Image (cartoon, rainbow, N blue to C red; front, side):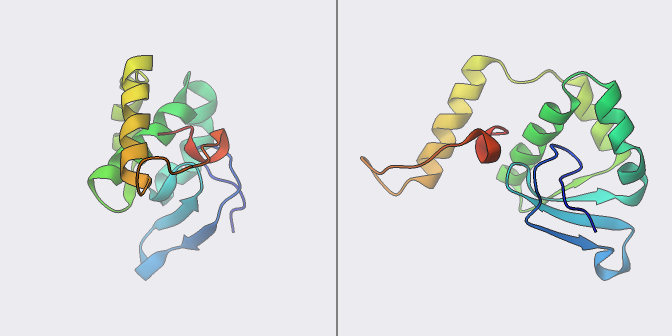
Length: 123
């Protein structure tokens, strides 16, 4: 059983190994969200993150972006290779993404929301 996220190293909310007999693990992370990692990738992911510059930030951001499109995200070796080829978003894009997140998660004008790096850095 995993205690920390294999992508960002945050403490996990939940983990389900081999759901429905598949060779994957389902992770629920406060920073990266809910996502699936293939068994093959899970074995090599620590080396990839250590070797590739900004790999953890790129993967965490990509996972959150995937979840805007559909519920849950799945990481496989070929997916990770494609994600790592792309740069991190520039500050303007990051600001736009934060504003979009605020619009989708605040009920109305004047409402307060706590934004913390531990849970919102990948937005």
